[in-house]
Image (cartoon, rainbow, N blue to C red; front, side):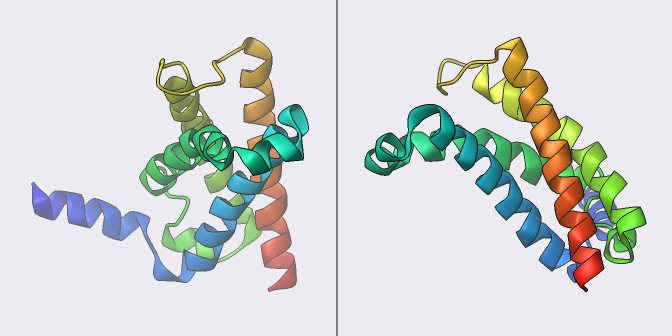
Length: 139
């Protein structure tokens, strides 16, 4: 069983995608930090850093789980935007579902309103697509 799991992740993780992984995590963190600041104000967020951490954590957790499983860091992702962008978009759909599932629990503030479901999905898809496209344009 351990060999099967190792082989699975060997096909899904390529060290050459490390810059993409760092950028993806930063994009997710920045986008959801920006939304938190927009809705609560910079002074509230600055005086309550834990609030910001709890707000963005479900999305980072969702991404860390979904991206490797769906191949966002597979060898093909390191080759071109044509390969990397669809892998990220497919991964974000699952990552967002995981994050919203976490937010639906009583342990995390924010909840899961229908409008937020649409916004979190759209913002994540757009942000990751733009970031990965830019990455390959500048590389």
